[in-house]
Length: 474
Image (cartoon, rainbow, N blue to C red; front, side, top):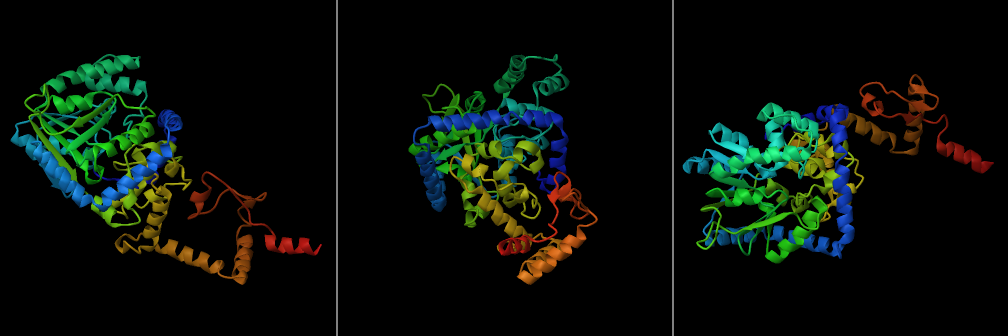
């Protein structure tokens, strides 16, 4: 998926005007409430959260060691490991492997990283058919869209939308029942599972001490992708690694309850290398692609490193008042919501995604929802500072000359009591043509954006300090 993060404002406005999208976004409340219930029912949640955060910090401090341990243990089990510096290199490895093995059909389990890699497009260009097998991903693939949400890719579509999509793309009748829709999808995918020569999955976690990849799913398609084709390729960001199986247990508890509110998901699948002689099923070959693609940049910045703690549970999206109104496509790239507003600019280009760090109320709901206590509001403020001042990333400073002049003027106006009095006097005079009954309902350009959806109180005829002194004197 190619980033298009420059059009956040236009995409957000379109989402706000789309009544269907607004109605479907109401479904996020269910995820949010389920997470709160699961948290209340989990003993010592805060202790587990702090423990997971400490494990993440330790792992990132020793990332090279654990990645080498992972590589060594995967190879011991008969698997292959490829370290990709960027998305293009990762996609090329997968495409070349498919060509080498004569693969014509690939089945895929849900992976946000494959979206980063634009993997489906790369496979199609090479004459290989990729088929998404997660129901939500299957729907958005048929629609020619990208995922709308990290864990619910098609949450923006109603059952009527999906029924019409299936009729148009699969040449089937219009279905009124969700059960009929899922049965149709199952029937369509069954032959794909049987015919595929390669299965591609993401990896919720990589366990360094055993060389194991762990997948969390609710549909069983992950197990089909890992066990039926002759070749299984797992793709994972380098930050997805945890030191031990004991650590994996901690993260699974937090991830699943934060994502869907379940105590445990329907399927937790662990894969350790290709099929052994005694195994009943499994791939003949296992390949693990570990991807950087800008993550080392986050790792090197002490202000942003904790963004790599993210478990991709989607809880911050479900809690965010901005995401709940504009949805995922407005963010223009793979990762939406508060976490996307931090990582997308860094993984694409900070100035290209300059609107995203400002797409937040800084209310702190995202931090409260995060199972590993990532301080997203602090990082968003840091990125705002970089975009306006460019102290760490001067090449991405994007504040306009007009904005810089306005901020200098504001700073001068509050630099002393005299300047504030003069500024207030000027403001009271300037507002005369636009103030009505003590309110300013419409500002002229370039300030008109501030009053499109709200009004402001007019400046008082006498400053508060003047009125206060008068009252005290009696």
